[in-house]
Image 1 (tube, one colour):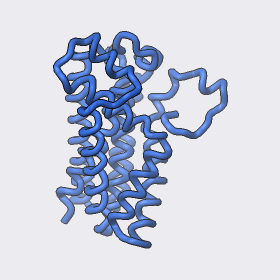
Image 2 (cartoon, rainbow, N blue to C red; image 1 turned 90 degrees about the horizontal axis):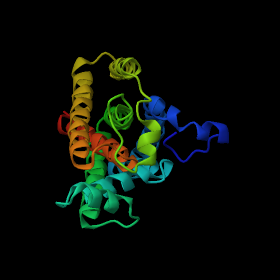
Image 3 (cartoon, rainbow, N blue to C red; image 1 turned 135 degrees about the vertical axis):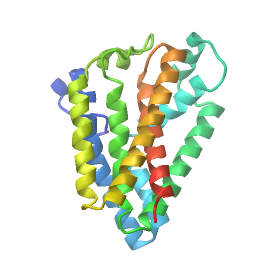
Image 4 (tube, helix red, strand yellow; image 1 turned 135 degrees about the horizontal axis):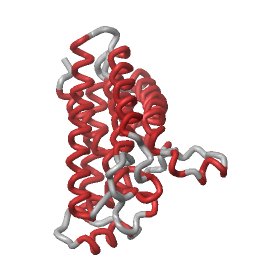
Length: 241
């Protein structure tokens, strides 16, 4: 279920059921990471809280999404043909494009989270970024999104998310963000604006992957999640009063 938590063997065999529940997983992961971040901010300071929050997410996902971001950067960054790009992404090492992208993404996440945690309601931005990241990952399971050649995970989850289910998840998430904003339209607008920017960036990455790689892979899914979270945090931090 996109985390390090174990699931029963019977459930693990049903990989096709993962992506439809990604938003719910994001809701729970976001709650845990935000709680840790807020506690760290209160006990030590916003920067420490931000580091602890990002570290908690990495630990709960075993860093797989960050690894996907690095591998995707290595595959899409240099001017390579499709076959070579996929081969590079399947390798276990990380190249210069991946290292730079990973470092900059984590630095942005931590610094933006620190800005948010210095504000009374800033924790909502961190929680929203995690939730929105999983919505972006669920989007890769919509019908019509082809898996890249050789991607076992891409084939396993292709077409497992219906448009109606995805649309329903979006509506529920918008409502939850509105409720969490406690009736403050400005705050709600800031959170939803950040989420929209994150999802738009993920859509650009998806289009690039489909053009360059011929479809999505597990690495691309992880990269979309991390990219969405980073941009959502960046926009939310930029509009903090």
